[in-house]
Length: 452
Image 1 (spheres, one colour):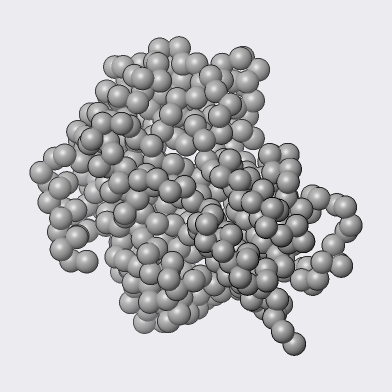
Image 2 (cartoon, rainbow, N blue to C red):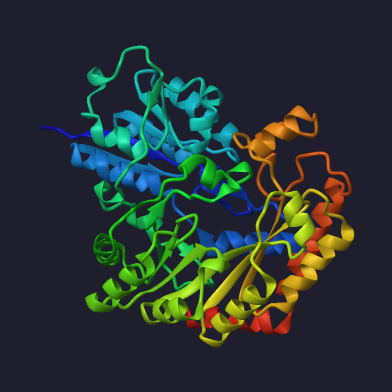
């Protein structure tokens, strides 16, 4: 029986700046840092060093392949159109995001012009919240798409006729997911450098976050509060197979908060150590979940890097934004311990929070320079559609734009009490320049480049 062909699309903008749609809860980020030469240099560097696949598309490819469907991957509109014309494509899966919504809809329209019989599915956390923004698609999967594709036969006749919205439940057990399939040409470029060695595989141990930050955080809002996880044994198997299939030298976990499930860190680390797997890995978590004991164990199991959200050192501003920050003494203690044990810390900071002003933003910059972190990321406070924060600002008539591409963590999109968009942009540029144009930071990055 002849296999049918499907196109799996993640259309990306042809720009010099980094665009990664799997970040920010699946809404995506676009690092448009600024227009100065130094800002453009930093943005270009990010594009060259941070290349993250949309993980759910890897799962969907694997699920469809198991149903006898041949999946072809593309990240370029022109390339996608060529494949539609040459490969007798029957179905297309497009990942929808807030940062590239216009581009994704452009692709949908052009596919329609080429072949009106092709069935187009749109998936992702943004179309789950705002399916009306992808009105020309045949089907929009509302919820985690893997659950639908696992249960579906793969035959169009088994879909409800004229039912555009397909509702899909959250997976209760991540071990039901197959090993994700990537295209080897693209997987060679997967990178989270210089935090981890290239090429980097991107995987997840858990989904869900029980913390109350869903007011402003897209992860908690979209993945729910229930923690759903892989078993440690399954995770190690996934890592081994991905190394075998794609030659990954490291792994970055995409969990919103790694290690939330009680006992998971210990079980996972022991499973790696017992398996003999020799591979570095990184994750994102909260500083208050870390202590010296679990850091020692994770280091022994290959931990190389940690992303942490510091956001602001100002307690009053944190409280005004419904953000709970880690006690300063514990935070500094953990960062120093990680530094002394060659664990790289990448700290995230936010400018333009409610009640922020020039003094508090400069305080944040100075605080970031005083910590022993390996890297830092500075972003603009962004009220994302679908969150309570966005709804409140909309009711207050404080949103300054509805241009979706501006919701990229690098542009001020609401009317701030103390700061203008120009001021915030200048503060972001200032932060990056002051942090990265220091001799010790440049030396660390150069050492990593030479090693690669």
